Length: 461
Image (cartoon, rainbow, N blue to C red; front, side):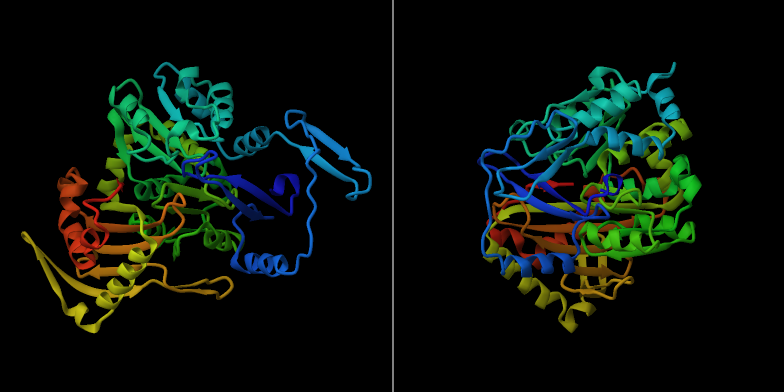
């Protein structure tokens, strides 16, 4: 936004939901810093909308979006004369990336004698042209490195959600062992998934922590320094351990990128991330999937290691935060609301904090519970009721959050489980095995299967 001096931008998007005439569609307004509108701006827009008396429609206006440059219009005094400027956003974005990354190092990685074969799935979203222009044309990756790069209204009939469930064709391609690096991007390009050879999955909470620990691989951060980190409350605490080692501040925020934007605008934060596959830095005020892919390629170019080696060395150094998320999508909104209300009354009862839960050989003692609230260190705004948390004595966590912003098909309840393991000998265990006891506790105290009629989650991340 700042590059073209815009006061804001209207974004028409289905985001990561199924799109098309019978699918989802959304309108977002981002402010001048490029980030999502803060609550104060949204409230002001709401107030203005209540005083509107008329609006005009211009059905015969035709603009050729393929013609770059300025176009002036004077529509017979129905409107004031106005100007429309068509810009090549791919080119603007590419110029910005050239000033952030060492393109020659990434190009050597993708084209040199030990060429890293990559596969990037744009999931038929808007990022297709960006992926082709930057990874193939600019950085030399072969044409077959980029797939599903033609933007389609319905994203080819599948949810453009970059996870192991919906990006299954990428997972299958990576399992073949032909590619050393894989990535999927969602429809509007802000979320991403990283896979290593043989479909080695990088949990998004780990991804942001590994980026943070390796920011010196990116010239932008070597030049400007690193100010601090931020993560959403539901994201694992892997980033906290990196922040502590680097002696930098760590901010824990509600879900929503505007909170990170506030921290970045005030100079407190350089890198932020969410467990829902979004990471970004202070180069913009949004999460940025392709930028995240280039950070990973920069780390691989610097360290001369595979994705799996980088992840496992990170765990050996900082410990491993086992983490998973269960998504129950398309729930009846009333049933979801009452489930969360009843669960809150159970876990916030004083008697609950003295409870112990025994599952197999594991005994978990409740240390504390809360409904997360955030006080913005920049403007003092207080945000309440952001997710139910149960923290156990060994620092394991359960988090429950309800979201209504799915595909327009009801409510979503998400359950997050996290457990920390320092011992490297125990870093190669299956996530579901490690977190199984915690998940069992979550299902028992929430009664989610009985109350929703579900037998399990739609997606496990």
